[in-house]
Length: 347
Length: 178
Length: 100
Image (cartoon, rainbow over all chains, first blue to last red; front, side):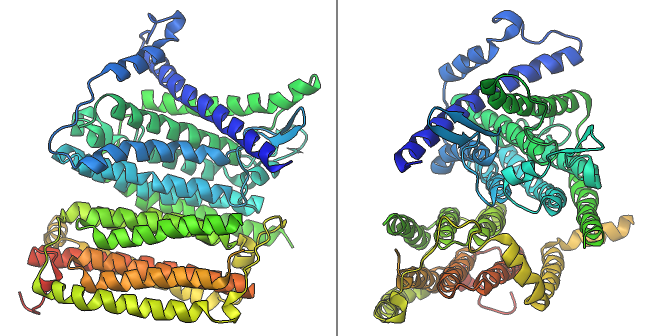
């Protein structure tokens, strides 16, 4: 492919992924309100459009028209930059996630992924660790005690559970042998005993790693049961107390975009990516992997929302003790056992 | 050509971040410009073919060590710094001295014959030069002893940091309760 | 193509900025950050030489430098916190007596 064609195709892919991601963020909010509402035996949004489907549009218009108040005592440069940083890092990590197989549109033969780097998994982990800055800086620059405490607690929680998150993925890396996300999905091809798919959650006993990843992901994205830094009864609203209108909407977007990225990563690493039965005409064959991928991400998001509606939240010291004293040793034990099994069963 | 453009752009960002670290008075601004320096250094490492080192730079340096710095600045509520007599002397002698030294060293490096070799990084190779399996091979075969020693060093650092930063009254409290 | 000397000059400039920051700054945390800047300059020259001689030992050394820098940052910041707790100041000119 010539370089201009490559650039044009990449720009189109980036535009499509960005549009789909932002729409998915808006409709994940709708899904959460509906599902949590149904679990609590009430309807959720029903008035704006059929089944409340236009509620995210109404919310967007509301955020645009709200007064964007900047309190006088904040540290202005960081106050304005922190939500931007949060959103930038939340959206950038989707760029290495593979959504499907190679497709051919006219003269262009391209993978359904913005870019496939050799170190794709490390890129996602790196951008996740940079996401702590949005939280920490917003808490500090707001210059109020609730924000500072909420920001410190949230960032300490995020960096503690990042370690367990990374270590839970090392077991999968040992089995797959590559950091590239497309390579990890390709290593899950085929079936065991003809009907159990060869996903990493089944083979190699990475089910323990899957549950460590799930728990660490809930803590990374500040969701229940680990959302003490944002709970209204605790710290008003934690690190985004002093924010209004569009800046608050950016924090909101960053949180849900992080959720979607974590769900995509889980379906790539543990649930087999886009693999599934494929049939039908040629043009449909190229789009069906995308549907299988979206199905997995949807299941993961539904579990996220299900847990939110069901569990109470941890107290902060319980949260930190759980992360350091239980989850980290179990993740290390998982790495050691996986490495032992691989070393002893191969030549 | 593209290599030279990318090197120049990210080199200028690096140096601008480093100079901004010196020029800012509030430590939080210095910390954030250091994060910018580390990010642009990660891109420079990618230009040299060191993909694993670039990723580790972002994860460890920009994502963990600098977060630790930002935490401490937030906790201690460090304000803008004051200028004292000692710092004026350091300004007058230090900055011209360092500039002179840097100019001499850079002139010497730029005119060395063996350093004029262009670094050829092959972007289309199937296996990149600095890929993780090769580095891991070296780390566990040739450099195994330093690797194990650095793990002990990190353990000692963890214990030392916890002991140094713990409040003295919390130790007595836990002894009283337990 | 970029010659090796350009990378070494960039590494030298970063190191010089680190030394200058170490000399002229009065806040303990900023001095510590200048030390990290010096270490980063050295890392860049390690990686540049590894690319020239096509040996990965340079990358392994950068790995070790990063680990040592992390350990040093953790312990150094813990010391800074203890100093702040006892002397109530972060100005290095006022931390000049062994006894308070």
